[in-house]
Image (cartoon, rainbow, N blue to C red; front, side):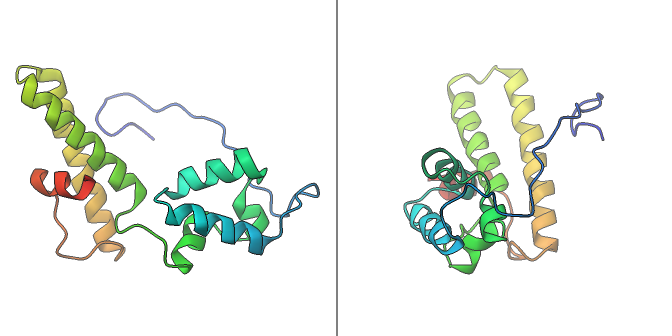
Length: 151
């Protein structure tokens, strides 16, 4: 695979294998992990942050190995999922930050190009999510709408 906006190939990296079985040293049962994850998500954290907190403070190496479901699916079943997918939300946040930077530094042409590339990545991702029925068909990216959705 290659990178989206460059002529270079991507770097292959190792990924942590997800064990199918629950670790023997894990003391929490799946119900407790699910309750803790929902409680953390209700405070406004996204699923990546919830997984990090479960790993660091509660000693859950992988919520998938303990509960048998991915963390995002677990939160969705309990009605605590965000309106926008996490990757799209992160891109919108980066675009808003870059727009504010370009207001004070209008001649920053390299970051202006980066903004155009990021906006095209958002449009591509939004098209994917509209096809998969994650976003409504009427959802379109606009720079003013991005500011409203991030704040």
